[in-house]
Image 1 (tube, rainbow, N blue to C red):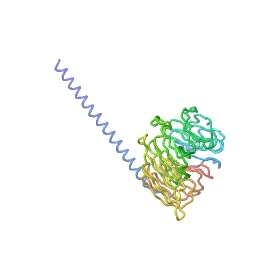
Image 2 (cartoon, one colour):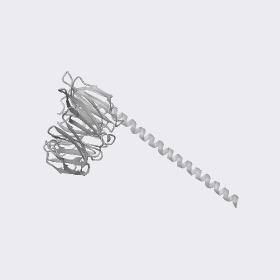
Image 3 (tube, rainbow, N blue to C red):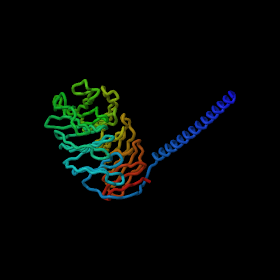
Image 4 (cartoon, rainbow, N blue to C red):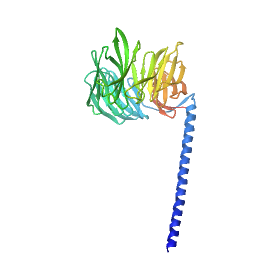
Length: 391
């Protein structure tokens, strides 16, 4: 009986080994099929990225547009906003939510998951996400600029005469016990632009100050975590003569770009307590537009022949594209992997990697345009809202 039991055990082990081999073979086959599928998808995406289109087709058309509305892409839809409030639509034009407000000079700021609707020179603010309004609140002083973090922390730069302050509010509208005050003087400066890190703990400011009668700019970096040992939370700054920087923006948690009237400076915050300059790009031509995406920068300059030049850079300031174009334009920005430049009935579409996808006429004047992926775009204009696809 013992011999039979041993034989039975051997047969069970043999069966288990065979079953294990079959299972491993099935896993190997599944993995191979997945690799083949991903490779095919990668090859197809690569081919699509190389392709240049000469025309497009109108896939669908619906809805009316309000000439007073302005537009911004957010998550998987489009924000419409005006002095009367804000609303959110999906890419089919269906209204998802609507919030009335009264603002004289409405503006928007976005993070990955939140948006901030606020009144420049006013005190009203609305924090929202793609499901609706999170909270509404008012600041103590008139708002000069604002930003929002990935965690819903709203940051406001306010001004009162020659005194400018920065205040923080959480996602319930409660004012946090954090404040930065700056006075127009040699030792501080007057903020003209600010940007908030995705985490909400970092802040970069462009400040103007007077030094022996000359106007200078200071790019200051503050950190409310790593910089807590400093009374003003400052972890570093850089000064520039004879150049104003009216825009400064976080490109990622570790990269910042400051846009001057004749240059763009790229900074690294890989060491939070020691910001450094990565590179500085100088322009001889007039800068007419600057715009940023996730880890990328676009600059449009006016060429000497009357046309324009589009420059694209990665977050380190390395050049990606230089493209001359001759057309009037009213908008330049990034959308879902594309740089879009359009005005009137002309449009230029370029991938963030520098491939020109389309350059030509559009049927009707474009008020706003955004990518919905895979060569499809939403257009808003006097024709209403429509979906087009490059072909």
